[in-house]
Length: 249
Length: 377
Image (cartoon, rainbow over all chains, first blue to last red; front, side, top):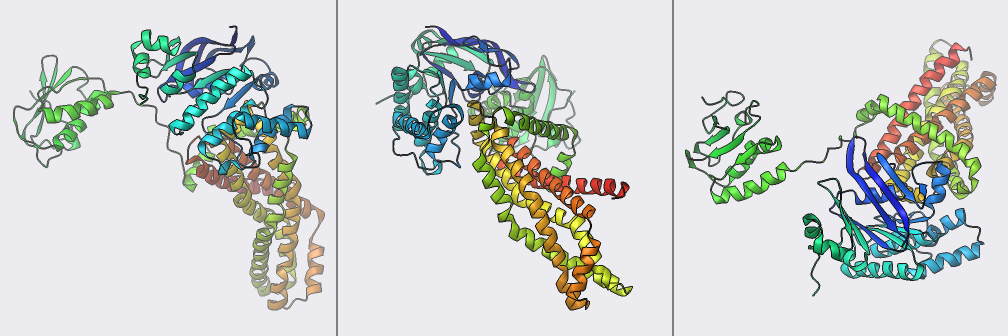
């Protein structure tokens, strides 16, 4: 598999506070790549750097061969549209209906007719199992539905990479497992590369092709491999992290 | 020789003794229902070595001894000193070990407490770094007007109409009420003074010039600061907290063009009409006072008002009012966009937006009055 995203010697932080440093890895086209680690280790921050929402203290993020943090802002805007991003709490635009949430990017960045845009939006909602929710307001949806709509919105411009920030957080085990199935189905049927930020060990084993471990104490990545390999041969803290998966009955 | 603990209130329960390679914390007497005073904490000179807890002379104790020891030893663990608590009974050692372990972990930097009080916000708004951030925001807002030409499709026309509706027609009743009462009060109070010098016919001049040149603009600005500035900050702050603005940015949508400009243009298009309306209401509010209290006829009052009014007063009033309302939008958008990502942020952003808008308005009013007066206008 070829490399789609490449991170080179990335250091990230706020002001003088370094969250993580020396990060180098690549995300291959078509894989499900998981960023894992304990709460507060910088997983979500790393994802925000990967999609160009934050500037690194040091280092580079390349999408194909384009540096996400160099060049004109307009070029970055174009690159960003090749990412589909789902934020931790969905981040649906609360003043718009579900349908309008999906239509906004289409209206701004596609040449489709209104009827065609509505069809695309309804199709994307059907992909995530929410056909019929087009006219609903986000406030009337459950947590799991909000996350599905957010995934549908992130898919609406047919992105090359889908970045999902803690999709299972705040969901019951049944809905969390359904989201894992959805992620696998999207990769299988749409061929989308997925970058998944999670600390859910169950999700990691369910969906990940490879996983990266961010160590909150060492403030860097300490391992990158398949979850099974990390569990068998990874550093002690990574094995300890992965061993805390709830046992299935 | 035992080190004297800080202060002089050592009642003998705690002794810090030097030993080979470190220090001994000797606990003595009866520790039931006893808590050591701050004065008995470790001396500041105690910076390295191992601290050994000695309980050989401890007469009696209860479970509270754990928290007392934690208070004594916790700061030392934070400073990186090694602790030997093996002499403690099991019931004390286990929980103390757990607490000290947690204490020894590095703590996240604490974010400075946000200022919620009005005086706090005023102080904050006058800080240099806050002013720089505001100037940067204004610069970004101006640049976004340039970007609008490159990507006009990102601009939300529906939002512009919605904002104009909120800022204009929906603000009319409250603006009318406040300017009417201010105009009435001005006519009544100025009449009382002018009547004493036999010049009640000048009431119309005072009311007209006062309202048109200063008060209509100021009252409209104050009302919009509360009604619109607070709403803008709450709305944008909520979008910031819920990552809705990040969602826009992730799609390459410029949030300034998409969210701030409709509010800015909405205000620019609406404010002059609202201010002109406030001027009319304020001047007409003088009628009840002058006709009923001071016996001036309605035609005389209106005639004197028209004679007192000139284009300079009118455009200065409109200019000032538009400037105040722009400050309201800038304060609202700035606080909303820079809100922190926590639950408190929305309330804080709203408070800051309103207070800052009021402070900026008063400063702008003073500055513009001085400038216009010195220009002879």
